[in-house]
Image 1 (spheres, rainbow, N blue to C red):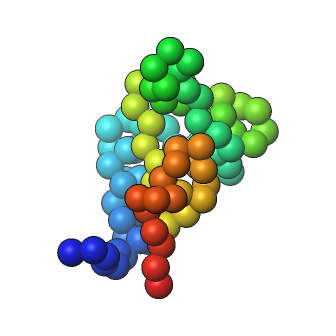
Image 2: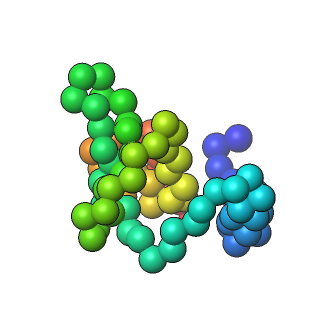
Length: 85
């Protein structure tokens, strides 16, 4: 109830297949650097990559596994997400 294990490579393979099937585009070689957030209500509007490229979206999904809290420290998830091994 407080932890688990996932077959990550199979999950990523299934997800990418579904994205392609739905007409989505996969951009590889991009490293997300920070979230683009609304100054008014703090809503996430997209991501900015380390190379400065910005992608805006209606929905942003963070799929960084156990690195979520440390990858996006500004979200304050360190108290809610704890990676264990």
